[in-house]
Amino acid sequence: MINRHFLFALLFFFAAAALFAGGKKEKAPPGPKIIQITGVVRLVGASPFSEIVVSNSDGRWHIADGESHLLFDMQHQTVTVEGEEFVEELRWANGQSAGTRRTLKNIRILDGS
Image (cartoon, rainbow, N blue to C red; front, side):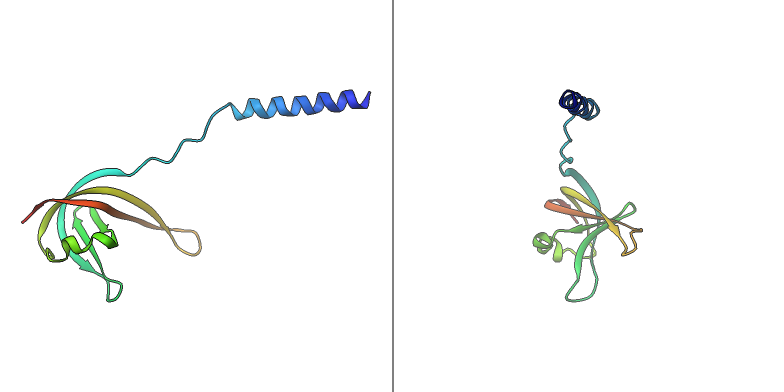
């Protein structure tokens, strides 16, 4: 008798778990978004931690480390670049939001004046 109740409870548990799971699969995170921006090339930070960024009225985009040499000689010039945008949410040690960091990778210079 106890075994029958135990098996019924176990079967009920698995049926309820399957019902609440809904058979849904987790979605893969979206891939990088290809964007095109126009802005001024600037060197920010202090050596040895300086970075190349492209700034406009919408903010600034950091250029990936391996690609900053493409824009290094274009400082203070207005350029149009295309690349994959990666957005990283920054947090302080206490967990509060410290803003976002937008990075462009695999860039292509479309126009440099």
